[in-house]
Image 1 (cartoon, rainbow, N blue to C red):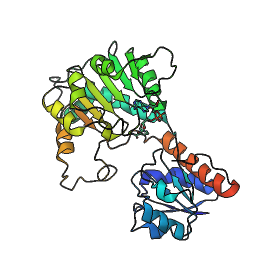
Image 2 (image 1 turned 30 degrees about the vertical axis):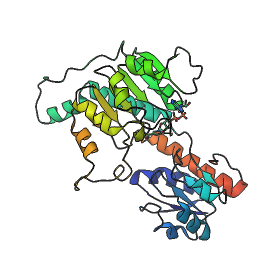
Image 3 (image 1 turned 120 degrees about the vertical axis):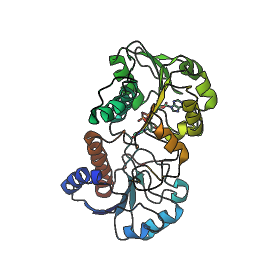
Length: 326
Ligand code: NAD
């Protein structure tokens, strides 16, 4: 069995090579993204393996099917890049619904601790033999209130971590679950009473810009916002305005609403034209990582294993576990 693997990064290969060779799957790794221009590269393969920024639009789907592709295997949970209407069930799409909620929750806490204990500043200072502590005062997490929006797999892991720090938990979810010792509340109360707010809900029409200027106005003046979910949950312009007005304590962003053309790539020798992102990155109390919260060896291993299982199960036995029915 042969699959064409698009948007390959160096970190994808070890885990996929391990599971593919064990299952007799031959992978051709392409660094290019899947687009209308590159879809012909998949001709003659049994299927394709794609990631979040690959394009699976109508023309791409037609080209893939014409070239003999029998499935589309997403190596991620989200599938907003697939035109399911046009696909109309002609070939199946598989995804990896969960690979390591711990990876994302731990990254959220890593960003929070970095921010409030000024680790990012200390790292740079001591490398320059500047051992001054001026401007490095942080605060304890113990006893502070964290508001968690979305108490699914990642939100729950994050709550467990926060409990270990002795924090008080407030939670909001559209579909509250029965989680011991978690107090659900409305968003208004959560935004007003939390010292730290961490977003773990999906991006939908309803949650688009759930944090905007009006919501930020309700927050505590020194509140810190963490977003490891999807960029467009936050109105980035409103966030920047609030940071500039010193309305917020800080922001920890692993995702950004206009990240698609930037994140995962090296633009260190380019002039980046996104002024909002550039200004956010320049702030001492904003930490930006490049959608890397998922990136642990454990998560990569789970992603590769599930993706290859999805493919092999379908081709060899006709099973359809993790088929996306959108
Ligand atoms: P999940 O489906 O287990 O949990 C999502 C939770 O959000 C559910 O409890 C759901 O009821 C709740 N929810 C749905 N609509 C809501 C709304 N309008 N308001 C409040 N809550 C709502 O998902 P998960 O695995 O915990 O992932 C959470 C998010 O993390 C994903 O949507 C994804 O965007 C993001 N994610 C980011 C990375 C990364 O690397 N940064 C990796 C994986 C996932």
